[in-house]
Structures are given as C-alpha cells and as structure tokens.
Amino acid sequence: MSSKRKRRRWIAPRKISIKVVSTRCKDDLHVIFWDFDFGLQEPILHELSIIQSTYKLSNVYILKTARGFHGICLTKFHWSDMMKIVANTRLVDRLFILGIVRNFRGGLRYEGGLKPKYVCTLEAPIRNPRRKGSSAHKNFLKSTFSIDVEDDLDWDGYRKIDVIHTSKYIGAFKRLVNVSL
Image (cartoon, rainbow, N blue to C red; front, side):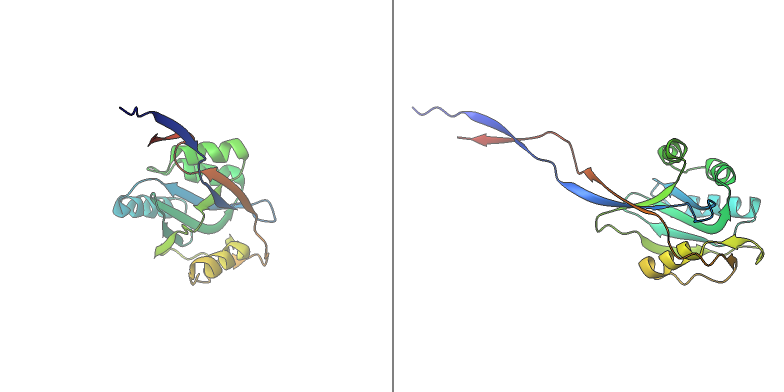
C-alpha cells in the first residue's frame, strides 16, 4: 500500500508595474483627478456635472478603468482648492483622497497594460478662457488616450509631467498549491 503525502509549496506572487501620473504642474499648481471605484457610470457623471457647475470647472474627461472610473479636469488650482473639490465629490474613492493627503499629490494610476479607456467628455456649461490649464496634462491625454482636448483654457506651455513608476503584487502574498506525491 503506497502512502500519499501532500506537500505544500509557496509560489511567488507576480509583480506588475504601475504608472502614477501626478496632478502637480511645474508651477506647483494642480489639475484635478478623481478616482471612483464604482461600477455604474450614470451616478458618477451626474455627480461630476454638479461639481463642474458648482466650481465652474472646464471640461471633465471620463476614463473607464478595470475597477471603476477616473475623472480628469485640466483647470489648474492650488493644492488646497484641488483637495476641497475632490473631497466634496460624492462617490469618490476615500482611499484615493487619503493617498493625496498623505503624499501631498494626487495621481492617475493605471496598472501594467491595463490602461483606462476614454468614455466621454462632460462639456463645461460656461467657458472661461481666462482660467489656466496644464499643457503637459493636455498632451498626456492626447498621446496616451487619443483624447482631443478642446481649447477652452489658457494653456501654460509646460511640456513635462511627473510620472511615478512603482509596482505591486497581484493576488495574495501567500498562495498555497497542494501537490500530491
């Protein structure tokens, strides 16, 4: 009679790269990013249109991610004003806000190969071409997501944005596999 033993072995978790595009502009002002870990599009669009009207924001660009949606507004604000707008947005991911407060910068995060997809643009109800906009973020949207950003702002002319490269593990750190011998 042969005896069967079960042996457990550890499989190393797989790492994926993450890109985080910073809200910070070269003049230390910030564009607005929102992160919604919420699967329904209509409530998010409704909330962003309310915020857009309340704070007289320019166009808001909506991206679909693997876990929800991102919103992007290219109007530049001081950090505290940007935070106030994001914090006053219902349905926004509270861990996203915590990350902004902890690091004094926000970011659009997307994971290795899982680039968000452009969904739509919430047109600004009132155009204000005297407001400043980030040219670098405008160029990022155009080159990365093929979004044609309208000239509804006074663009700053800067070319570079901060992109942070990091990584994370997929799945659990400890995954057991049973092997019969």
